[in-house]
Image (cartoon, rainbow, N blue to C red):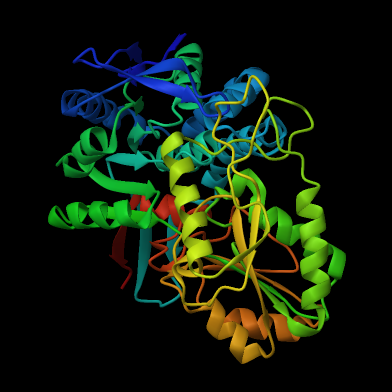
Length: 481
């Protein structure tokens, strides 16, 4: 039994109240670790530590802070297999995914922002003749980050890396559902001797820890990734104190396949975009629109390939579909499958819980599900299910499919498949989403802005956009005449 601890002021500590919560392996349904059930007192202690560390940390040079981020990245790399296995046992995702995506990307997040600091310098404007303007970026102070359970370490580092790089000190809340790799990272911080208070990790429930963070007067900004419903609560709380807030929330993303696409590439990627990480990625393409001339062929080929996907013990080398993250989420997905059936949907694949052999017979497994025959405005096509569930339907014209793509409250991402790049870009410009991929999916350049429109988010992460969020801009104007 692993006892997860908070990391506050450079030390690993239990919650002040002494309470713990069970942490369950979703592939087995068994408790395998305990998590601190922290409260406001723990957040106050972490904020105090971060406040004390801020003067020192903010005065370091960019190069010095960069070195610490590299040390953190190298510390994860040195324990790579341990981190990968922990992510799989905590989340239920296949081990191949933890090894190929989650842990490598966590390392690259830290290294990327360490490198990006080279481009985050004072700007001098002196071409007007009458004066010189200097534009400075100053760290905002103590900031809070709240990260989700679907890509636990990946998105945890995606937030803390730019905050630390910008010179802020951090109070971070990982998801209480998947806390293990954040705890392992806190062990790394102890091992490398990260100065006390620079990064503080507080485990606990959202109404306890998250609320205390968003309400704390000394936390100057909140960066949140999670559900739209929770994001709205956080936005309201931050507005009360005029606290800066960045929100990366839900998605119900379209995959648009034109008849002139590269068929095999579009097919294989549409499947990956639907079911990667059991569909538990905010960027997944859960609404698939196929131009009518190839609709039947595409649908039949997709069904055949989905039925051939290996679902099993996430720790097995050949598993490509694992468990969903928790019993609560498992039941939510099954509810939506029942709803889809009531709305008139036809299950082409899946549609129910997967029956697994020991030791996974009590795990939370859902069969990859493809649904046909639903109207565009039904709840199944409007609400974020966040599981291995996708719908498919035909379209006839550009205007029609653009209307389908834009008809939800969300606007995070989408992909468009056509060998006519002029047409594909024309459609992309009319789709209301923060990210559009053409003939690819999840191809990420970390320099680009990441975020959504409508109820998918506010603000942008990535590159200098993230560094700017954690900074205040100051202009110094010097007269030269």
